[in-house]
Length: 226
Ligand code: CTP
Ligand code: CA
Image 1 (cartoon, rainbow, N blue to C red):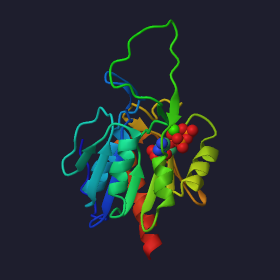
Image 2: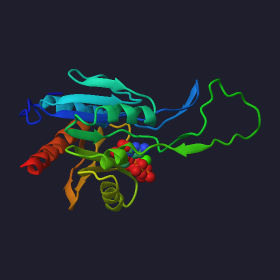
Image 3: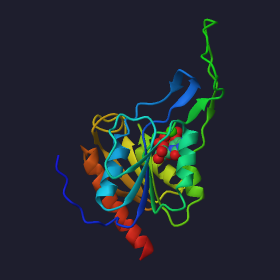
Image 4: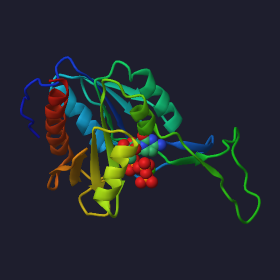
């Protein structure tokens, strides 16, 4: 596939992207995760690098191939992702949180393999830190973009996330639709800003979605600093 050389409209900008599904360990051989492929985040990292940005990709579990010209930091859990992102937050101009971060992790992580015993086993889970919300609370100059995976009431939930997590934009995908969301090469997204719906994109290849989204982001970043 051929991507047109882009104007270098992110030259000199430091971009931090997260991708993939976090892995929350139960014991040394078992973990909880989700269906995220990391494709959207990887496409965004590649598209940003093409536009001249200095890109760091914090990647959890993913099926995507490494990309040339992007600094990849591998993490496993939500907690590790939080640390990796916070370390790089002050120097970032743009942060895009495309990762599927686990909402819950096992309350206890066993150091040795859990042996089977009773007929029923109840797992206790505890909430992970909301990385995006933490970033929103600490936001200074950064332009912050969140994702929202929804199956119903897309606009309402997306706008709620935008406000609660102090994002500049929220990219919502209806993961119940065919051709959107997890583990496919295409996506159907609605982009929301403070004022509501900014753009509703048709079904496109994720790499195309990434470029269209970066177009919107660049315009808004310019308007913010103008
Ligand atoms: N997110 C995060 N840290 C978490 C959970 C989510 O940074 N512990 C980020 C995701 O990377 C995404 C955004 O928050 O950019 C929205 O994630 P989503 O799962 O859609 O929303 P939640 O706030 O977790 O709410 P819910 O799952 O209940 O819809
Ligand atoms: Ca969630």
